Image (cartoon, rainbow, N blue to C red):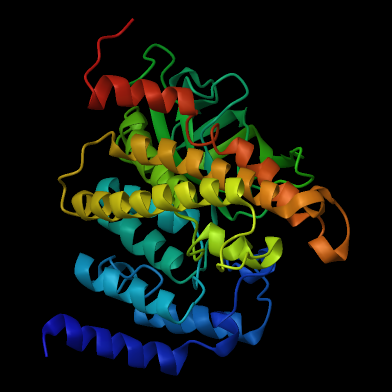
Length: 393
């Protein structure tokens, strides 16, 4: 038996012993997704048990070093773990911006003290983060941000606001871009970390056309941030921000792969009906769904290759822009097909039978995919310039 086969057998046995049956069922609502943090209330004992088991094993962040709360797995072992979790339909034990975005930035730019302090809390689900990047006048042109941190000896005094701050009203801490030098557009931004319960921090939810939203406006009024709470170098936060954006775009691009949905055509065959040949009983929609499935399988293969190259340092720095753009467009296309396949029922908004209009609300939500994390237009510009080496206008 090879080392990989032995590891697979070990993982399979561990999952069978530690993943509760309830954590192998499909996610039905937002409460089924565990975000952790000071304010998190577990939906049931099984959710708490699953998080604690994975955190103790290092499986919430399996490829992080053990000293920072991970399991220290190699890329090959991490892939095996994910495959085995998918085999039993295990839910993610912990969803976290700390895992997806801040963690990789801290691993690269953080001090040893910061890594030990913050990464272990993230891995155990003890701290929930939000991202303070976009501002009302600084979205795609993020370096024009105006939130200001003024030097006051041993701390900064931060004033300004952020917008589209996902789950700011539920987060414990924020990783935030703050201007600390007005004279230098790029080399005048500092990447700060501070508690959302700090005096002067307030949030206001933003309602979207889907009828709900994770987004908030976040306001800073004379917020005091200790001088020790920054990542990288003072006035060089843009370096950290760019690195983190790559991981954010990778996270958003994951929507294109469709999660556990194997085939959209197969998923809708029951709802729409089959013909005598066992095929989806709508030839036009069947062809569109088949073409979509092919593109998704190709995207998943590309994603596997990208992740392998990323982990070994061989990926193009702008590859995440490409993944984000394609994943965004695929996710939007998927939900267009979901609406087409749902017929008149997909237009219903309130009834229990449609789970409160889950389909149209999800369809409307995908419209934001091509804006958040960098607009599709910006992604195409980056791809054109940095990957295709096309001349500028």
